Image (cartoon, rainbow, N blue to C red; front, side):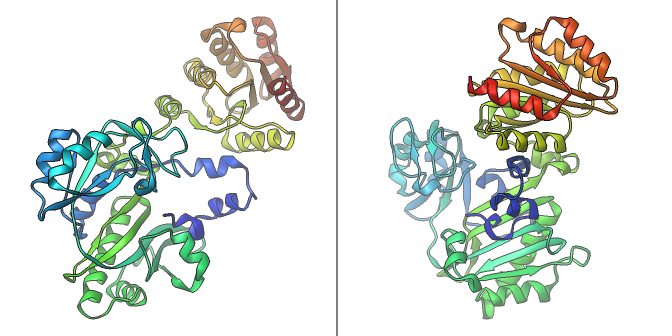
Length: 428
């Protein structure tokens, strides 16, 4: 499920149409994504109704907590940060499905097959993601399923609520089959949510009578959660109407703005790095803006704009970038060393293109950091084919430092020349 398919910020929509370099789409992945059980706890703090649920981190704990749930059956959900869990499979044992409705007497059997295993879904890729937690939830009788989401939208200049009378399945498929089924309602970020706006949204989504009142309150509380927690996206699918009349959030995906970490420390402390690329996690320790891609030419660039231009040019010339890596304006020996180690740890990398335009960060200082970084990973005997392009402040001094260092590389001042050589070396 993904609201981004039809109401994403401008950059992501453009990336999907192929109008911007892959780095733009990649950079916009940089947000905190919490597990379902973590999001459910946050929702409850804002008065959002959810089924009774508890997380379990071991088989005995799963059995104990399942027995505390009402009824004879319990829902057992794998907790990985990817969609399509119900249709996934576990890599180690081939066990099908990351979501099951299980008799309480069989919770131990199912938990054994799911906990500590790797779940592969359509969103994880073949490598899958580790499942270290189960969510035990009460089984509820659903009468109707709807879809609801809130995200920041550049087109409307603020939060945008999205809803559909139909939910529980891929919202992209619903939108493709009937675009009129999708309801979009901007919210004035200065005024905030009002009862009238929330009620109008609930009505258009098909709620009436007492359920309209309940859905109105739930939508209002979800919006307060969205703003109060600095979310970038909050997606509910399904938003379920139960046979007993309750309106509950039965599944969710919530993303949080990394730039708001300083005021959302409690939320960001819950980040599960086991669900993230190990190289990206390592890069974050050094404040490096690194995102792993699928190509063979490693890029090490100072400045996000230059990094995206570098990736564009490599692609135009027939190459494929292996990463987005902006080392920033204050490149030091420590950060450059970390950057080289991360790049060298990628087995897909065939060549490295260091593309530096010196401004406030002078070329001579960056050159010294590059040389130190190369030597730290083993020097010429260990480094992969290297291209360095330097231009800008103190470029002559920077070129001299690299030439005198003994570092084996293709050195140039010209952007295109360097890119062509990096593509050539990767193909050799």
